[in-house]
Length: 438
Image (cartoon, rainbow, N blue to C red; front, side, top):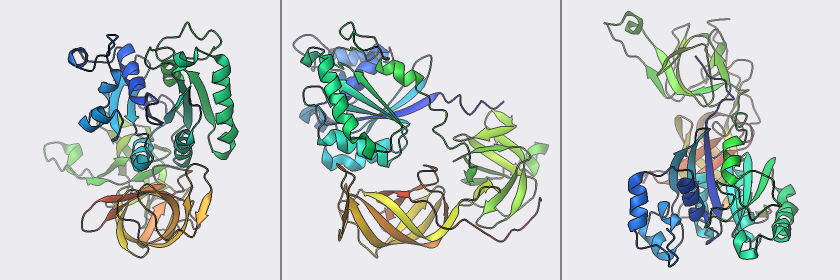
């Protein structure tokens, strides 16, 4: 039986902030205080030479896995951690603070429902705080938590907490963020991380974990526009099982909307139409499925569908074009070259593409546009135009993060050189209808 689309029980979030704001310590504290560590992890921490003079375990070591990070005391790579409470499961991406690792933050935050920006209570809102909030806004992360850390070092001052909150709220109108929360914490001591702090009687909101467990994320997914990029054509052809003998289904992850048995659908780019006959998952058949479930659809008619096609709701077609307008984060040491051919991977399809114009670079601290950039260097974010070798079927990133995003891959090396967010299409896909069902 299908779950309600609103019973989403997995929250993906990332932590970001400047160097030494305490991101890794905060994640360590979340894992430690929520009793989410294995016995061997606890033993390794206690055996570690990184126990401070006060006898405290260095919780940052749970995520700072790279030796270079431990030696420098900074987070370079994106570290992923999983934990669960009775109320929800979590995947954490601990993303780096340095400017030169912007691409890593984009990678870690690209699939997040929520972003935690840490602010050092002594320093207040600095350039990196604004930079990371701007990236969260560009990536359309629905929920933002500003965790004002090291409150113990400013004597738990409510006045200081409010000062930082006002500093942050001054530039929030520049960001397209609907849900922003402010929480005073001490990651090192655990105040307001998992357990409420006796030091903040003036704060009546939830702890950080309490907020993570209760924030409403059911509507973060696009549940309006049905999209199923076909990953593979499922032909088990098992003679011993009469149901599987002529079985032909189309497997993939629902990238948007809800699909029901009996619903009319269209396959793009061919324009073939049919109706949904069956919906299958690993656990059996369903009457309906929704984003982001992985499913196999069986259609009433035996039509030609292959990997890279997309099955959509006939009442609500996506866009289609070979000329694309997008924001990208450039991730490669060699700068972006106008006219050079790249592979563009979008959902389950890969096509050739060339960048035709760099419109401007985006100042990540202010979100101002800087026109006339001859190139985009590593970690730059800019607006570009591309031309693809065949039409892409897509939605704008603001409408659907799954069908509105892509990566660019360098030909020859297969290195991922950019992550992109598509602007809304100017033309709706209008194939010739090849009507089987209606």
